[in-house]
Image 1 (spheres, rainbow, N blue to C red):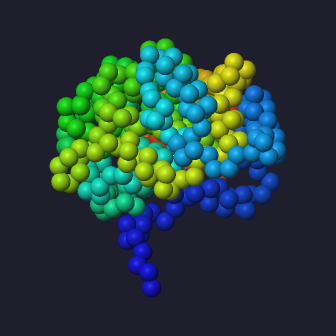
Image 2 (image 1 turned 90 degrees about the vertical axis):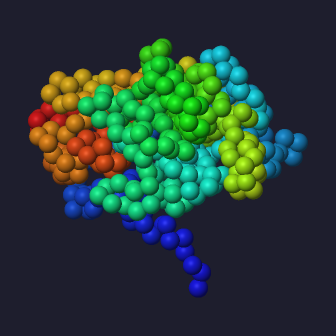
Image 3 (image 1 turned 60 degrees about the vertical axis):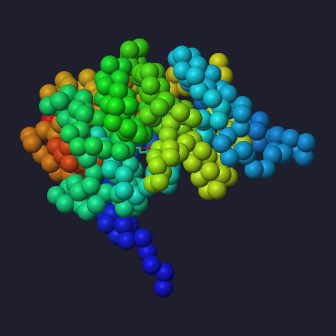
Length: 408
Ligand code: MLT
């Protein structure tokens, strides 16, 4: 019989959002008539922008004739999309990226999870806490996390981000080899200024740390002083891999398209001493394990950068950020300690009356029929908090604030 990867056996039985979906389904079975408002998983609700749909239709038609048919896509992505990414996401911010540094994929969740393939098992991992569970779970699977004791993985360095430190992480007191940063932050919805991010880049340069920078929510930044890319900080190309996604930017959670930037200047160490290009390792891994994002999807993503696409995407982001404002103002008005929601589509709430995260989650579900995400599901420093998303429908968002007001 085949032996299994023992590290999988250390994982909690369900992925956080699968666990929540199970609880919500159980509630639905016993309360079939109740109208549930889902503000739990960060899944978009608004239709794809027209420019995107048009590009997809045209791409489908192209595939319908022998002359313009296309089979396998290039492993790293079509040049038309890579060029658009470089021009609109980086050159426009004064950042120079080469086409061979961009890897188009089917999602930032997959990329942040798979990137560990190119790293040795015995790297020490650091995470800000609370944290997007994919970073932790995939390192558990790879055997890098140690054992789970009192809500923490023994080999992971947790960097707490709570109301007490204004959600600004402080440099770890123990060496880490790999550090995950996600800004705007999922789950707290908070951000780092350029100076704060520079502190991390300088730390990584001084200590040979590899930063995994997840910028999946950068399109939600409203404040012009907040960096959209870690490469806006000098020296970052020597220490950071950046992950971007069209999921939350342009409503692609179901379409699936993202990209990862692995700069050529970025090196790792091999056991025997010489440095190795992480770009070449990721390229090799991609060519072996991935056959490219579909042509239709890449044309759809390209359309996000057209003048019409940009205007339609902006309107969509404004819609979600208006939801965020409505929720934030209502929650603050109700006297709840509320964070995020100004440059990110997530609202992070301190639970009232010292309730635990799961107790508050249950109360919201059973008494108000609102689904949130318990903060502790994102890590020990999330205990006593709950996350709501701004990705809901407007009427649902307003109705949720009404239910909360009546309840509180
Ligand atoms: C979330 O709710 O945190 C996100 O939807 C998760 C994801 O993007 O995979």
